[in-house]
Image 1 (spheres, helix red, strand yellow):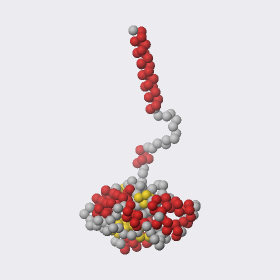
Image 2: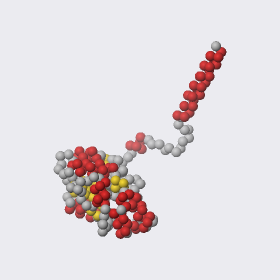
Image 3: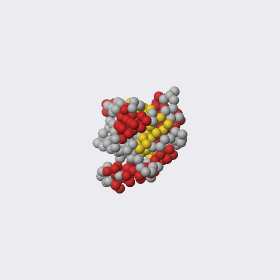
Length: 240
């Protein structure tokens, strides 16, 4: 009987120690100052933005005939920062002078986009527009070069049929907004997607629908624009 009582006492002691250990492991640290935390007031204080999804854009086009749609390239359909980062390091460390260098643009428009990452939001958008029978245009602020491989790369990356694909329009880095405006008007483009303010402003100048794609937070193109600041539609989760 004495052995049985001793065994029971040992079991209860072990159980009590286990419960105490579990409680200690799950208890929050008493003096953890590394996590600032967030309040519901801070969460509710976000700026109002007209968020839309790709599905909502598609639904808004139901019943409308095929149309011409346009896309900016850098940070809109391609995460092309690797090439721009390489150009800056090689040609003008610490400055943006490399953007005036013809050799940089030759490399970027022909070979370095092999390291650019197609954005998933662009895959979804282009697939939706191709399915609708829309014509796909790409209008970029890059400089035109003697040769370019960018049109072929975009067509292959986004599986665009030849009947829907148009060669890339190079607007140049000077007076980019006006050149984009002229092309939007010339090709009767009805929707233009872009990550920069000037993309949205170019669309508005010709009275068409400008939709913002988020620029990735690790893009080399800084500062990041204020998406939604112009009252435009902004595609949710479009930073990648």
